[in-house]
Length: 321
Image 1: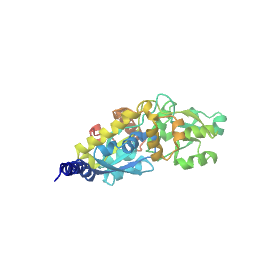
Image 2 (image 1 turned 90 degrees about the vertical axis):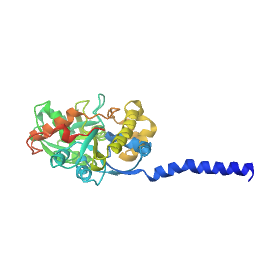
Image 3 (image 1 turned 180 degrees about the vertical axis):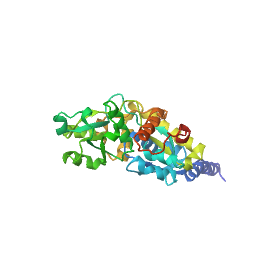
Image 4 (image 1 turned 60 degrees about the horizontal axis):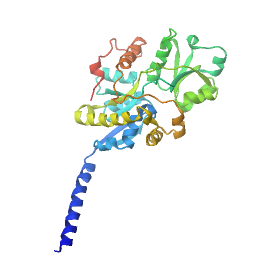
């Protein structure tokens, strides 16, 4: 064999050997099923998928949209999906109370110090007629989800300021596509919604923004089911990938073109709309907002939305990786 032949043979062998581990790694990636609510509240998940951080951590992620956080709790607890990017809700607390395997592992979008991406609007004709927060007792409110949704909790936080409770109002579950019609047809008196809809309805003179949740709180996050809760190594790898994405978008990197494209892909909102809307805040470490976790439970127990008598303790609700 000539020197050249030996060289080419060695090069081919080396190339095959260097490619072999990559092929094996691709074959051994673990499937990771994720249910998500299409909202920029869950931007770290979208970035971790689109930039390959979850793939690099050893996972093939498969994302499926869900309508509301409550819809995902039984799916996560029963292992039909591995994790959910969704909001806290009465459904989560009830699932834990029933002994189902689901834990809250991270908080995602925090209500920002600047801007009001989530807001309460009073219908325009009522606002023009003098209706304000203090006069909302007995009025009909619309929001996504039932009386135990995260939106209900945010409304409760707003109403506290004027001495009202959720039991003082009537609520209707109105998905985003139906909210404009509800305002136009005067089917509701007030609406709690999120950007870009909150700004859009105000610009169309369908309602006026009168309040938003307190800044610095988060009722949205990540939930793990049994597959991850029983595998600390995998759970930690998923969280590290999500934290890498969160660290990127916590500051001005939120508006980096590749990141905005990721939000647009999974929320199905135009890039221009996302750029123009108020943004949520993110903690690089995705720390759990313990205060909101506990306060929401107390609120729902007091309003008899949760029917068990004593609040569940943190050990049953939370896992940290």
